[in-house]
Length: 102
Image (cartoon, rainbow, N blue to C red; front, side, top):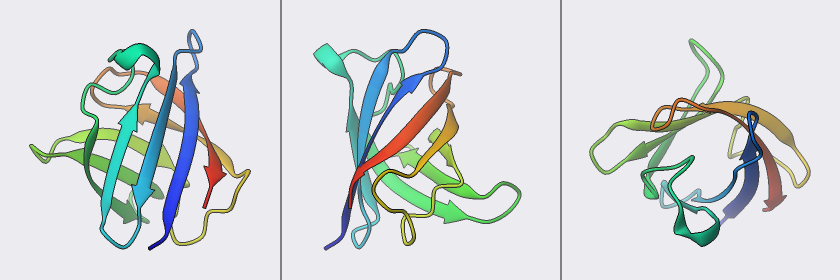
């Protein structure tokens, strides 16, 4: 099973987060230092890659609400070192992301 780990931070003040995406299971889980909820209020759910209207991957919580949009992030094509940006819906913050492992 392919697992993708990425880390990132908020653009406004460098609050950090990490996410692991399990490609075959269509699941994700995430966290923050000291178990805070400054970026990701929800910490797990399903994901969906889409091309339109904006290319990226949407992480969705158990209530089927969008948690975060990772722009230009395609789980089937990312490689270690790829970077990008995104937006959280939970906390309305702009973030960056970087692929740490595949």
